Every structure is written in structure tokens, then in C-alpha cells.
Amino acid sequence: MSQRYLNPFTPIFGKVPPYFAGRDRLISDFSTAFAEEESNPLLFSLISGPRGTGKTALLYYLTDMAREHGWIGVKASAISGMLTDILQRALAAAEHLIDAESPRFTSLGISSLFSVSWENPKPDMPNWRSRMTFLLDQLAEHDAGLVIAVDEAKATAEMIELVSVFQHFIGEGRKVALLMAGLPHDVSQLLSHEDISFLRRASFIKLENASVAEASVALRRTIEDHRRTIDPDALDYAAAASFGYPYLIQLIGFRMWACDPFEKNITLRDAHDGVLLARDEYTHSVLVATYNGLSAKDVSFLEAMLPDEGPSSMKDIAERMGVAANYASKYRSRLTEQGIIGARGRSAVGVDLPFFKEFVKIQMEG
Image 1 (cartoon, helix red, strand yellow):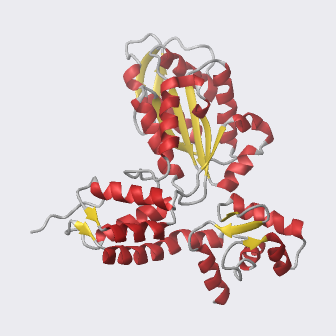
Image 2: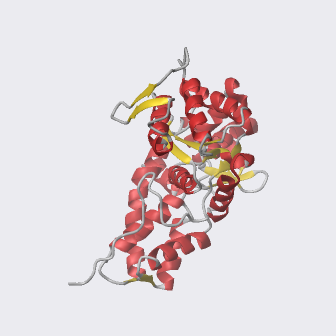
Image 3: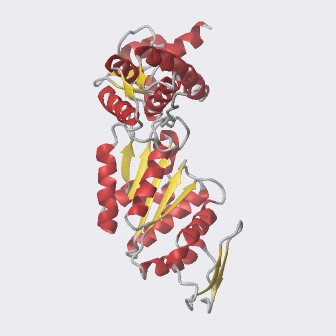
């Protein structure tokens, strides 16, 4: 029986791919940051990008990278109970550094609820900051830092508290890092929150699509490193069809690999079939969700772009919408923030989300 080649592509939410297309420089910069420790501004970073740009996977990868540099890494989501989750996970991750015989700890129980017993505790340790400070003191004795990675960052009460406390940790010279990732709209609201203006000092990282050439490298390296080959024309076709969009790179790679996983070589026919399957899946998982999240005026703006084969001028869009230029600019900002459109010079825009213009046209005709 022929050997089946296991599929290495990862079109799954949050799954770290074998290669991040177009992220080499960013990953290298973070590696330097973790090595340099508290002196590097990247240790306080806010990552923004629309659906499918690989925010969650990158956040997980960076957290694991920090561990390789000797940090304690904790991953959480900005949902109810986030602060408790961070504390519990930090305690669990740091257990090997905390001496069970220490006079400061009498026991550290890691169960479904977690429990920590303190010997001779201070009179009051009522809040999250106090508990985290106590833990950071223990880590400091081992020169170990703490990286907190928060996905789906948004302006919740616990997120506000986390950023506020982190500011104090920085001022106290603690070895800490805070990495956050979220959708553009949520990140924008978080940055504008008046109670955490300190967040505006974070390194802001906007994830964009890779180039087609970078997509080609990621596809080829993933395939060849997992003992298969791909015809040059098949690679060119698959890379171009991905538009450098991270989710599509993984999805197309996954589907064309699966067309015939018993054959060593991936052909142009496999690439064609894989792209068709991937586009259909991408339509339902990304395009439909994105379209359903738009307002009526957002849709009107996009429909006003449909007559143009290339970029659309803001003047034409406003005229087609029947609104003033400054009113149309409001929706340009909204759609740009969501990663759906992007600037094409000073006064023109184009659709950045792959295949979305065609999708809007189908919805309009239907």
C-alpha cells in the first residue's frame, strides 16, 4: 500500500502553521525582544488585524517563543474571568520555580479550581494586583519573567484593569510583557478608552496580507519539509489564488494536499481542485460572517465601488451613494479599520479582503 503523507497545513483557528508567510522580520524582532528582556518596547504590544490574518496563531507562537527564552508564558482571552484565569495559569506554569518547602508557600494545588495556600500571609492580599505582585516576587528570585498574551482584546472591565495594573508593573521594574491581539474595531475602542491612555504607548502592530511571493515560499517550504513536491505551475497558481491572505494560504495548501495524499507530487490539477474547495469554504467561514457584520451604509459604500474594475475614487463613491464627501469618508474609515478596503493613493480605495468584491456583487444581484 502506498504511503499516506500527513497534511501539515493548519486552516484551524489559532493553530500555529509550519511557516508564517511574511512574518519573518516580525518574529525575529520579537525573538530579540525576549532576549533583551525589559528594555525592548515590543514587550508591550497590541496586534490588530481582520479575520484570517493569523493574529491568534501569531500570539500563541510568540508566547511559546518567550518560553524558549526562559519566560513564563500565559495565554488568555478577554472574556469574563480573564484575570482569575491569568493568575491560575501563571501559578501552574511557574510551579517548577516555586519551592514547595518555601516559607512563603505551604502548598500549591493545581486542580480544576486551583488553590494556593500561603504561610504567614500579609494581613491583606485582597486584589488581583497584590496576588500577581506576590507571584512576580517569586519569579524574580529565579530571574524569570512573565508574558501575558491576551486574545480577542476588547474594552472589558477586566481588560482595563489588566492594562492599568501592567502599567504599575512596568513602573516597578518588573520583568513582564503584555501581548494583546484583537479585531480592528475592538482594538480601536480599547485604544480610545479614557481610563487606559497608557495603552497608546504600546507597540502597535497591524497585520496585513503577505505578498504572493511570500505565500509561495510558505507553501513550498511547508510541502517540501514534509517530504512532498509541487510542480512550479501548481505552486504559482496556488500562491496567486491565496492573495497572500494567511487563512487562504493554509486553506488552499490543506485542500490541494488532500486531493491525493498518497502521491508524492502535487500537480496543477490538485492545485485547481484545492483552490475551488478552499474558496467555497472561505466564502462561508469569512465572507459571509464579514458581510453579515456590516451596516446598511457600509454595504452601500461597497456597492458604490462595484462599477469600477480597479480602484474607486472617493468622489465617485460619494456621488453614487448620493452623499457628501465627508459622509462617505466616515464609512471609508470604518471599512478600512475592519481590513475590508485599503487606500490606493490619496483619494481612492480598493477592496483588500480577497474575493469580497465579487461576493458583494452576488449579494446585490440576489
